[in-house]
Structure formats: structure tokens, C-alpha cells
Image (tube, rainbow, N blue to C red; front, side, top):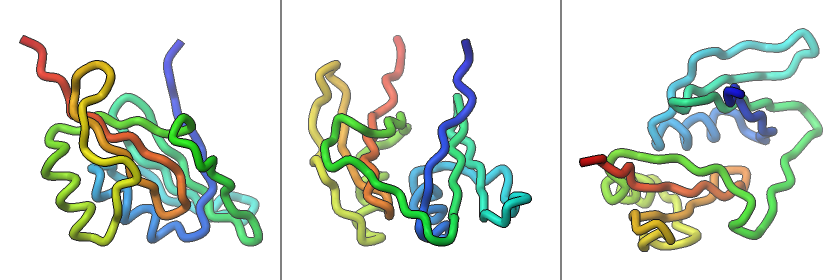
Length: 123
């Protein structure tokens, strides 16, 4: 089995694309679907994130951190600084993860929890 993508609704595609660009995601496709929905596909490295903006529809994220998207990043401390400079607040501060790596949580513009993990460099 190979992970292909996950799809989320967004109320503001531009704002959400800007947020994920801060995390290092790249837009690889942007189209309007045959139903008239605005759609963007982001490359997340080993899979894709598909975002849809549909008039009259809104995401309903869960308030608990247990439901989240997790991303590994090369320099978490630097990324946290960029996020905070852009006005984003951490929902869980920088701290060691249960596996010993540095981690933090932030919410995307639609309120979804995003876990950020420092990439572990293998010896």
C-alpha cells in the first residue's frame, strides 16, 4: 500500500496555501473542478494534501490534538520562528516528543491541528 493523498476543506484557499507554504509545501496543481470547486494539490514529500474551497461548506476540525496532520521538517526551531513572525501561535510549544525528537503543534487557518517534528538525522 502507498499513501497517495488526504483531502481537506478550506474556507480560504489562498490563506491556507500561504500557511502550508510556510511549512515548505509546494503547490503542484491548482484547478477548478468540473463542479466549480477551487482545488489545490500540495506536495508533502511522501504524499499529497488536496485542498478544496467549496462555497457554503466549511471544515469542522476536532479541538483535541489527537486528530492531526504530522509533518517532519529539517529545522523546527527556525520554522517556529517564521510561523510566529507570520502571526501563528503554537497550540503546543516546542518540546521533546515521546520518541525524543523536538516537536510542536500549530493550527492551520481552518483550525486543524498540525504536528511539526524535527527530522531525525540517521547516523
